[in-house]
Image (cartoon, rainbow, N blue to C red):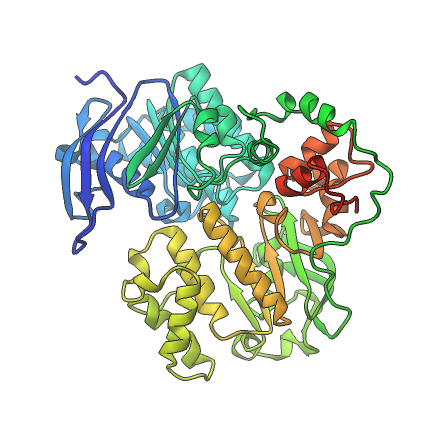
Length: 567
């Protein structure tokens, strides 16, 4: 029997009908009990690697695989997925795709029942995982009513119920709020450190993950780096990887060997800031001051009660003017997605009303409202109808009355780095590519209001910056943007003029990003953690006279610029 948990030997893989490999000559050995983070740019082969480790490639996906892959001593290339059932737990990139039951408790029990565990063992395992993951309150919920983050936890519970020796998670943080990220990583670290579980996490978001991982692997079809996380992150700023802001900050101010944890950076930041004269740091306007013009959206005492009786929204009032960029932030289940589905009539108010440029959504169809409001769903697969990316975008143009303008469609695909995938099926794309295609299918007809539900989930840092550039161009054209996001680090860079903080179906606060994101007490009430730089500045005791939101802003202060001031 092979002595390693994972042993890949010179693995090269080609998907069917592809001439270039998805992975090329990858060798990777993981010992039992390690906690490995695998990062890299979108399309770099990370999800493909997971599918190989789980025995899905080539047995389910076909194609051509060269080399050998052993998982827990089993040759999964030869034996397939059945050979590692119960040995390896997995949470896929889109967790709702692995949910097959109606009730949460039945979903967690499903795998154990199929592997003929005794009823008392099944009940004991369910009790253990729901308590350990803090989801006892979801036990009797219908799975189709769960938020993205809640589905993620249920999928993890189903995997952990097996008590696997090896746990593989593909983008597990993408659908979680910041507090949920910390809680999940704490659970994974406990499994690793206390129970000896081998944990392999494929992820773009490394700010929190880098604190826990014992080893970082950077993959872009080949292994570019394999070693200690801190050293790898120092050399990863140009690789499309979401490097923790504190690492970026120390590189910006030319300090070698940056710490991964904020508590290790506080004293050094205090020393760098102590010579800065706090006088003269006047109020600093947000990137985007918004508009005092026409009212685009008006939400008036909005309640939404689902057929189950659950109150998802409770007395929401909100105004969005033309030219605003609004970010809606809150924990999983706070009601963010339910709220934005009212903006184009997908949901109708139980009480109160929503106006879109003065039109009461209760009196108009989704098709009528969609001409004004383009909504990009959290799950990109909910967008797709056609057999190719190009046809998908032209479908939107035709449905909105613009005809089959392929030139316009190709232009938006090019702007989102999808031109070379124009003729591929949306279902053959990576999750990051699917998300960009969903965004393209809305942006192509230039609606007056663009609503994005978690637009950065599953895409790498370089693509986030490309998305940011597109959003800036929309603002310059006078468009209105509403975005829900768990990605507080992206929020710290976005030209947002108002943050709306939600909790338990209510708006806790709304206002300037610098004021909201520096209010630790308020964020804690909403179960949201601040971006890393505001947290660092607050820990250093400097937030009373400066409120930088990201590494670039704080570096400009330290390096002598006074353009970034308190808000």
